[in-house]
Image 1 (cartoon, each protein chain N blue to C red):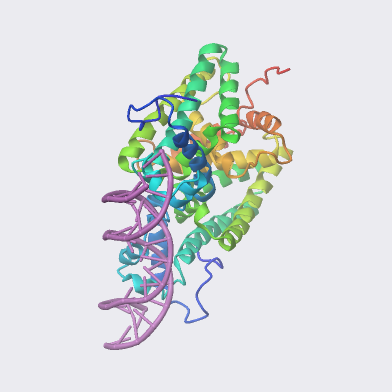
Image 2: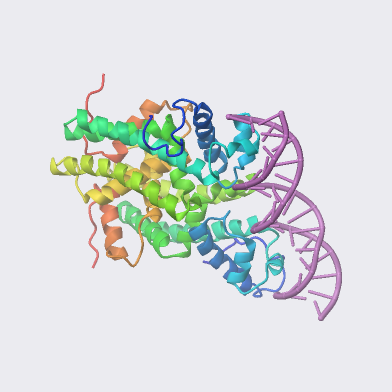
Length: 208
Length: 208
DNA sequence: GTCTATAAGTGGATAGAC
DNA sequence: GTCTATCCACTTATAGAC
């Protein structure tokens, strides 16, 4: 969760940024619901009980909030993904674990709102912002690339690893447009089903 | 291409709407590049050689332009999809054809910009607008549902037809975020490869 | 660190002449 | 059907008091 992705704290006191964190969280939520462009700084400020002017004490400008939302979220899935690949050396289980991790993050975690912002508010970033987030995105895709390549080498799945990666991530990410957690289907079962659709070749590993 | 999706022409003379059509086309392009919210009516007007005020002679407000972009595009893939399913009764070839149709539309056709708008500018629609476009989207998904259900029944693919549909459409649609036509890989070959990734079970039908 | 007040600019949309 | 001119609501961001 906590990581080097948060840029701004100007080397001041260590834990004064409760407001800042709270703001990133509600911003992620509001951006998801309304979009970045349609969310005003007044709304963001009000959502944490501030006046609009006070917001700029915590962030240089509006874009920095969007950047924090995106960077925080993606860094958390990077960290978890790295840990998983380090712990799980079996290609099948690693790929399956990564899939579940990503899906769970999209559905429940902070990562969901962040990923949503990265996908749907990408065009609102400045060039510099795009650049910074793209780096993080590449780092995350590299994790997937390792897992998929290993699976292909082990004969578990077939095809071009790059296309598989893009396609699978696309299929998952797109899900945020329609799947509502808390609906008829529990998310664990839903993820099982999606896994079967995404990697039918992958032998369903036993889960107690 | 031409269809009942265009709402506005107030029963006036038949073919005076060259401007209107041109406007929808460049709007689709601009929306894709910059996003709907970041595209101003002044830009839209300038792109067809008008002043901003003149634009509102053709569209009641800005949202109507977005609606026209979305509706036109999706109606065209609906029409083509219907025609295809009507002509091709073999489940495997029908599914493959639908896949190629959608991919080609995304990459080359008007449908690409329209689909882009539907996906990425969805939150900019009013509730009434969402409702109208959702209906068209449902009609298009119904076409896919027919094709996938037929394929499942024929034992060509396995799994829940609804999930397969959502997942496959997601994987394809997401492609517009990264695939650039005219790059290293020709789009026909690219589509072949994507088809293999999306439906590995589908026996590659001979294409001369 | 938060407030109030406001600057400075931009957006969508309208009115009326031509 | 297009232009010019303009309204006015609203946005991000700043300044300075507390």
